[in-house]
Image 1 (tube, helix red, strand yellow):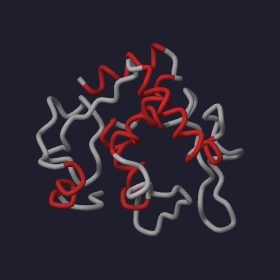
Image 2 (spheres, helix red, strand yellow):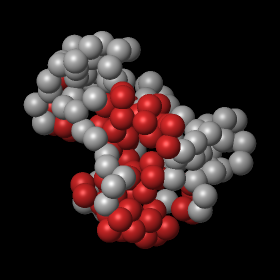
Image 3 (tube, helix red, strand yellow):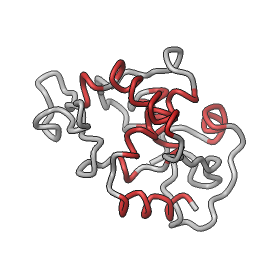
Length: 158
């Protein structure tokens, strides 16, 4: 299902370019024909990871948990219709999203990328965190995944 078209994709990511192969990475819905530009989050810079940890503690740990465990019963909708925050540790689904998608979802929240009517308590951080800060938080989260998961993710983004 296309949630938004290529022009909106370009507004989020800049010019789109085709992926190497249809199965080489997950594409943001609406960008399937031309794909967003490839982005890769690096977990190699200790200063970036430290900044990401501080930002996560300030902006994300309340909902996601200090150990990235998410909120209890995260797959069951609340009475208000929203889902609790999922885990971002190795047990969660975050690792299945491409880096560009994770950046966009962090920047804009989940709702622009979800089916119509989907409701989320995940706040958008556009205007709160700069692009480099968003990448630092994501790098910090990813750095805590087991090495095997990080290697698989690298293959997805090659």
